[in-house]
Length: 249
Image (cartoon, rainbow, N blue to C red; front, side, top):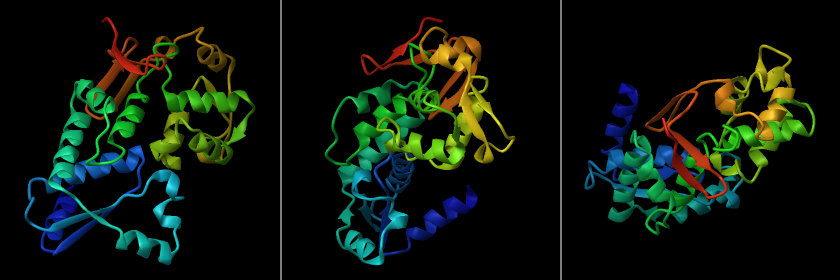
């Protein structure tokens, strides 16, 4: 963290700072952090952003040099409104009360694209009122319900799912989700990334809504600044109404 802060402080000595991000949840959270950081030094350097929609690229790292040059040429100035919105988004994301995140998920924000969708995806990571699974876990079990998969096959399927594509997950993140789903899944190898993974009978019961996953296993996870714990977590995701709801304690 000290090295990161020193690196950011060093960027203030440049005449222009270029931020390169894709429009997915993973990138959005990191972008908000940086905008909140730079908002403390608004006059220090010219801040610009390369921020193509996720569907417009296959990932910045897979683009050809000419495509990257075109994106760089089209970089846009980070306006004071965008800087303020980034700071507000970071504060909402890290707040222990998710209602600020819900408010940002309920409205469009012209100053910074994808804020609304990013917070919608963030809310989808809360456990469902119907099953106790979040959207990523649901997509994982639904994929396995069609047949056992190697981790590579599972990763490609889950990250292509419309519900999870814009989460921006890497294989390390999905591997953690898969390990956390035991005993709803069986894993053939101690190394998840080298394993074949299958849904269990209990996994099918939970997926069908006949058992609540949180009643089977207590949750202990941080989603931004919100700590969910126990068998009856305070906040849940109502997919039918597209709302976060507060559960009775």
